[in-house]
Each structure stands twice: as structure tokens, then as C-alpha cells.
View (tube, rainbow, N blue to C red):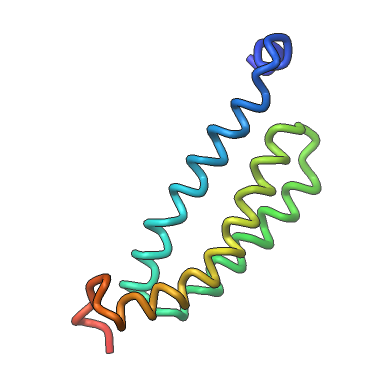
Amino acid sequence: MSDFFTNCNLNGLLIGLCTFLIIGLFHPLVIKGEYYLGVKCWWLFLLLGIICTLLSIIVENQILSILLGVTAFSSFWSILEVFEQRERVRKGWFPKNPKRK
């Protein structure tokens, strides 16, 4: 399958699509993480980012390495977004979890 993408020069499209999906996945993860755990969920994003960074360095497959790098930096960016999500909740743009103090 990888040869098909390489031979048809579709690697860029594949990486672009996967990047779009990865970034799209992190949006609800930030919202749910802040809702259920508050800003203390930031360390989960840090841990995922570090793991994906290390895997990106170790993995020999170029496309997988790139996607792991995208996931790593999406995780790191999500740390900032968790704190910004707290502000969006404070402003009333998103619901506050009534069970969390």
C-alpha cells in the first residue's frame, strides 16, 4: 500500500489528511479533558507528546514518523489549549462540569 502512495505521488495528500484528522481529534480531547479533569490533565498531553516524540525518532517508516511528530506537537499545543479552554468555560462559552469543584 505504501508503494502505491509513493508511486502515485500521494504521500503529501496522505500526510495532509492524517494531519487534519489528528488535529481534529485533539479538539474534543481538550474539551473533554478540561471538563472531566480540569487543567490538571495537561500532564497527560505532555506525556503523550514525549512518547510520540521518542517514537517519531525511533520509527524508520517515514510516513509513520511524520505522523507521530504531528501527534507529538498537537499534544504539546493541547497543553496551551487546556488552559485556554478553562478561560472559555469561565466566559460561559462552554459548559462547566457541575460535579467538579
